Image (tube, rainbow, N blue to C red; front, side, top):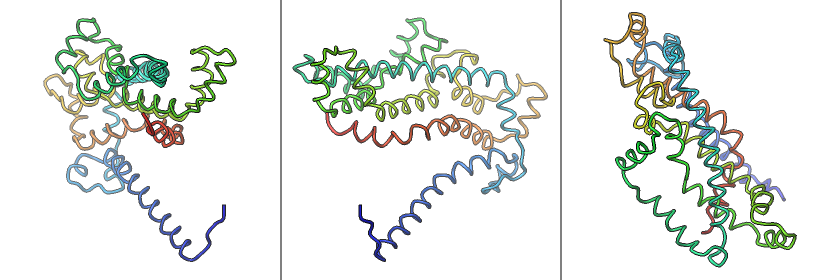
Length: 294
């Protein structure tokens, strides 16, 4: 590749670097500001005096969250949910995507099955029937209620289907000649080549199971069964002074909804910020190759 060293090219490179640096700063600033607000005192946060540095530095918001046994329990529930949910998503996506990546001649009614999947993206049975179904299965206050409800991410299935359909047919033909069956072909040929799209849909699953709070709010009747996001949401919106001890009231007096919400947002971002850098290099490849054709 020949590098263009003209003046116009160098000016454009400088402009591009400045532009990207500006975009990076704009992405980082909200996170930094949220952290600054969460570390500031009640009065400073409430009066809007917090900029990019904490005012009246204190850890009251984090002490209120981290000092609660229920918080640790909800954190553990969310970790279990992520591992169980992402693992189940991974298995189901592969088992659905591989056969659906075949042609209609190889898999009869393949197009009908694809339309059924697309239909579920556009329409659902409604909140009440969904709740009644989960209750009839005896899954209320059970972590599997949080996992099974999102076990078939249709968008991710379609991404992996399209990725598989883009792989050269010659690979499959060569495997058939060597006597490989469907299971061996999927596990030893398709899955190793699908690293980018698998990393992408895994990231989608992790983010969904970590950030989702509504299912926990509806399907869990006791705080001991709340996942992290549901617990924090309830901690912010439900404050009953009649059931609080004097020490809790004193601690709550040091808080404001703004500082507590900022602490909640920052804590919720940490796991994704840790996981994303490891999967980011696969993200664009997985999205583009998985959305080319259907």
